[in-house]
Image (tube, rainbow, N blue to C red; front, side):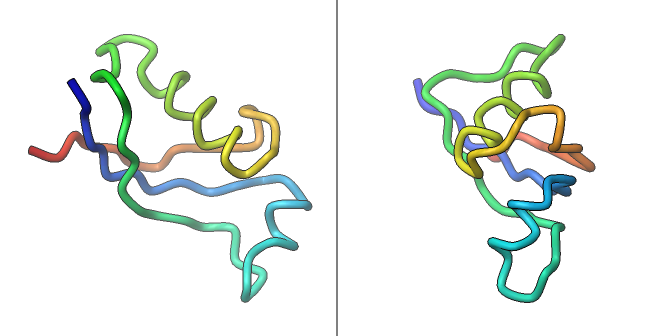
Length: 70
């Protein structure tokens, strides 16, 4: 069952900053996953997914806030 999450995060990678239109490295939006995140370690999984989308290391992503949408 798919699960949607609102996420607000920053990227620390120089390549991610160059990809941003205004040089801003702060992002927010809705991410849809095939299954719900685990209560423990969920942010690690979310960081990994976001890192793949931005083509950067997951260590370069710092999640500020995330919440499941109903």
